[in-house]
Amino acid sequence: MNDIFKLILLIICVAMPQLGLAADTRIENDRISTGDGILLSAIWTIPTKQDVSFIALIIPGSGNVGTNGDVSSPFVGFGYGGQKANLSEQLADKLAENGIGSLRYAKRGFEDPTQLANQTIPYLKSDAEAALKLIKTKYPKLKILLVGFSEGATISTMIAAERSDIEYLFLMAPPTRNISDIIEYQFKTWGEHLAKVELDKNSDGKIDLEELRQRPDATLPLVGPGFLPARPIDLDRNHDGVLSIATEIVPAYEATHTAAKSLLQQDAFRSWYESMLKVPEFFTLAPKVRATVFIYEGQKDPQLNPEWIELDRKYFLTETHYYKFKDLGHCFAPLDGNIDEIKTSGPLDNAFLTIFGDDLESLTERN
Image 1: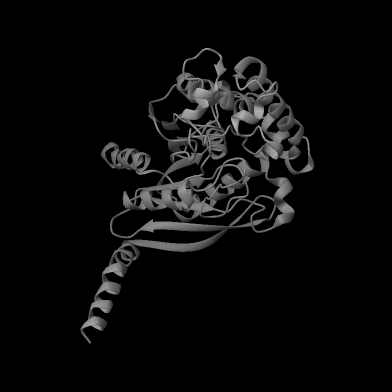
Image 2: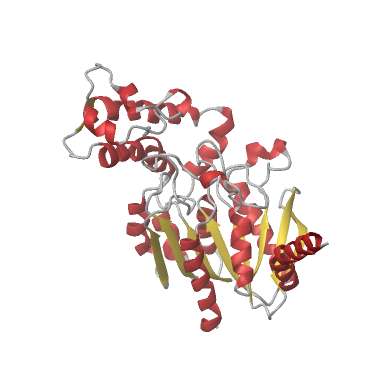
């Protein structure tokens, strides 16, 4: 009997935090009707413990992403250490914790595969605008935030450049260069950088056997067949036990970059890629934004060169806040692997969530 009592007490203790969260937050399922008549599943997360003055639209990153915001894929990576990477859900919870409601939604194509070909920037921007229309209908008096991650940050910036009713713009890992530069960074520059910085420790342009012994389990990303990682020694073309950055590493990544550009011309990617080529340059969009801007970037981002964001944020002419996270990648999680060579898709690290939460808390002080 005593053991049964302990078991019941343990169950109650585990359940209490969940019960408390449910009591303070209302979760509602909904549907967004897009301009072309597609219905997208959506979730409202609304705090109930206090008056709500703000509502956020969460716009997810690239890929076939559902309401939870998991952008995991072979090209972006999977959850750090095998964890769930539900980015939109994490953002919604942090917003609610700070008294801000939110709407998040599944991208077209997630539930209806026939719409995968329409996961292009014009359609995705139109879908986000349809979500904003729903917000304005249901909560006409609340101030609006846009919270965009990666591709979602691009769409958020495009929308905020056109509308005056967006009060705050939260951009997580925003692309600020054109898609051609981004692809070159992802499939060429990032891997070369890892080889130079992490493996060529004496910076002599060569990686010798002694340097390789220091990182015996290290791989170089994307240079194996099918964009898989490869052991550095497998790139030793002349079999002399020394890897030349200039004549072996760089050509290997040039081949990877060429293969990636070819892949983007295939049916599965062509429509999306061509729509990305037509996105207005960031330096033309940013000056049109009237919202207060918050920018977050990971310093170990394998998708976007962190230097771009640091340089290009100057194009915003409004109040701008900028944060960089030394040890986090594109999805604001640590990277996996021996030399941080394995991309991860989340979950959002506490280092990011703390700063994000502080910024959200500051909104109530401003208003």
